[in-house]
Length: 193
Image 1 (cartoon, rainbow, N blue to C red):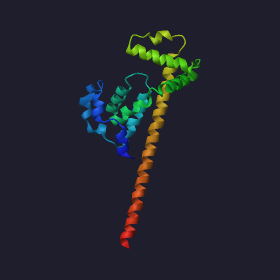
Image 2 (image 1 turned 90 degrees about the horizontal axis):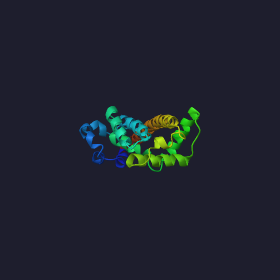
Image 3 (image 1 turned 30 degrees about the vertical axis):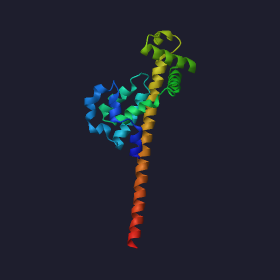
């Protein structure tokens, strides 16, 4: 696996510790195992980061950090993967989550526009004095369908991404080993001549 490329894409320990909400965890982040780039640490981080990304709250990075501390996973990978849900992907992911939950619970489906309005209202409610979206959409939206669908989607996506990471890592490792073996044999033959 191209470790240097992966390390360049992920946040550094300094950047993570610059975050105001994560500074409280600084004493716990001195463990070198949390920053190692090995297969086990990174694979656990994929599961944790992807799972945390699907929780609809502003503290996704904090949730990923706590998971990384508990399970001794790679912190930069866990925190970096929470950005799967970003301003461009949040609406489709939440819509898919509601769709899955509504199908399972037999609830009526709502429009994509309504989910977008709910996200905007929820953000205003959290960050300022907006109206409480839980009261505004109480009769028209099933919170149970939304929570169930997002949870199932988070678990399924986390499992698929974790297994895919494991397969890709193994493939890269084996192909790298085979390339080294071929070059060693070639150099051995040329030295015998």
